[in-house]
Image (cartoon, rainbow, N blue to C red; front, side):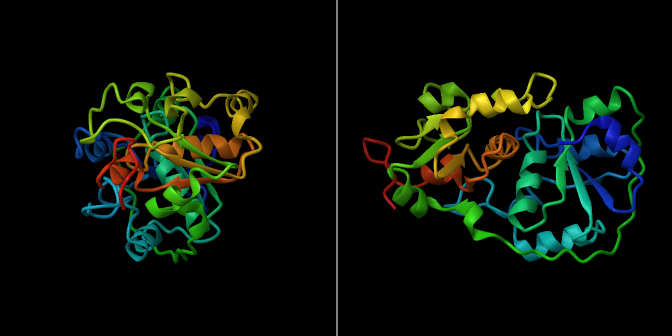
Length: 274
């Protein structure tokens, strides 16, 4: 995480690239429109549906991982190289900025941070702009680490192992199956425990202190593997970011998440029949 003060002091640095990740699931154009209306100086924009995901298929969830060559080309046009520090921000308690953070880490780029408090924290002290930065030349080299992501077959094979924990990042009422506003089936993956993604930030989008996060995730500290999912592999990344800051480095993303799981026939115990 970086502070708004740090970002203001470094936003003109040649090796810092800022990315606006604002998005609204209910209004897919809203994020780009907000960006055009005003953003942190120098910030580029990446769209969750168009840039941070690939087209939806029958299976694979609502936000499949992006085509890596196309994504790398987009990052290169922002001037991102192996030496670049990337700072992502949004206005949704890190929901979308964390997706970019996770994607870059997955692709081997460790120099990435999320703006603590999001756009509001920056705008409270510093001006924003409508100026659109120019396309730059870079050469982003994607080196994906397949060990950081799992598919449905891996989840089914691993979730009942004694030292594996599956974490559901959705709101508690969705985990319980009492309310499902997006996907066609309510419920959760059998055996999953619930750590709602919004629990790791306050209402203003500031991450809880690391000591609080360590206490929050205490039951996961000695687990060999933590598989994290949400509805579509987006807000799960907030938990993965917070786990990393808490010192728990073995988190993996089930990218398809519940929207992939429930795209298959489910038996009476909610087990996916793949």
